[in-house]
Length: 205
Ligand SMILES: [Zn+2]
Ligand SMILES: [Zn+2]
Image 1 (tube, helix red, strand yellow):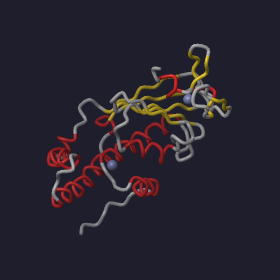
Image 2 (cartoon, helix red, strand yellow):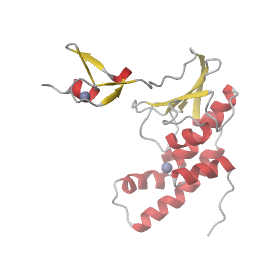
Image 3 (tube, protein in one colour):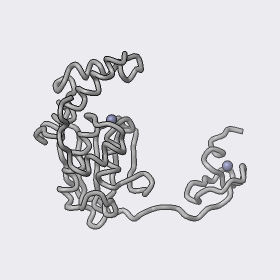
């Protein structure tokens, strides 16, 4: 078997977390590298950063969590279902922000048309063992191409300044008037004079 390309320790940790190296992971690793350099924020810490990802459908979400340290659990990662490969990072100390959007001409088809074609079969679950193996092997090469591609072919970068966000976690809880379960107070809705949890307030009675 061919010798694998050497990766940085953070990329190794990421592959371990995500389970494989793929194009989406490689792309987001480049995004994180760019963002943390632009904002002058230390990687792998996340305390000074806040991230917003505008797609729910991307291996790259894992890359953001491992490399930038912005995670769902910590509450400094927001994932929006806009279907855009856009990643925003905000320095929470000074409000400096960067939005990195995948280049409109970025195309898997151009990097490896075989992988682009196989992807549909593999994701539909209908690929043969052989197709799957070919896909995995070629995907590794795609990832390496992305890791060394010139940045201007990968994404466009927009700098801006925004307000500094404070951490907003609701620790206070209160009871839902209908189901009686305890709920974070900022998730209770007033409905006809009753304070209800989201599922109860959406139920039509
Ligand atoms: Zn992946
Ligand atoms: Zn309820």
